[in-house]
Image 1 (cartoon, rainbow, N blue to C red):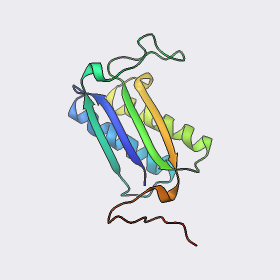
Image 2 (cartoon, one colour; image 1 turned 135 degrees about the horizontal axis):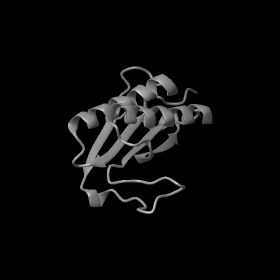
Image 3 (cartoon, rainbow, N blue to C red; image 1 turned 30 degrees about the vertical axis):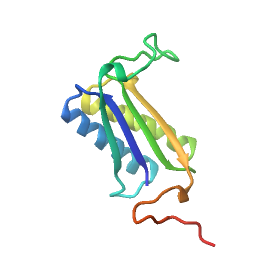
Image 4 (cartoon, rainbow, N blue to C red; image 1 turned 90 degrees about the vertical axis):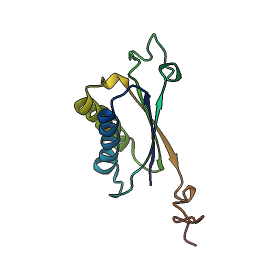
Amino acid sequence: MPLARIDLAADTPAEHVSAISEVVYDAMISTANVPAHDKFQIINRHARDELVYPAEGYLGIAYTPGIVFVQITWNAGRSIEVKKAFYKAIAEGIHARTGISQQNVWISLIDVKREDWSFGNGEMQYAPQD
């Protein structure tokens, strides 16, 4: 049930976009216990001036115009250890498959309740059981 939003530079090669998409999905399955076929992603390409980050860096991390923003909305309840492993799998996987620096992989998680989703038909598929 995760929704991944991936934002990157407009000039990112198509093969890198595809690789980033797959890395995020693979990390969900391998580290966060997301079921197979549960792949919902929105990928946006932006002009360089639409990706804003601190040019002087932040927390000792230096960024470049090749920054990739990954935001995942998913069900709450995963442990800190799972989240750490998830961050690492994404950063390492993107670097391994594209050469993008791990420092340029920025990730945010949004935890929501199970009932905060509708997968279609105007229904709450994960409604609380009475």
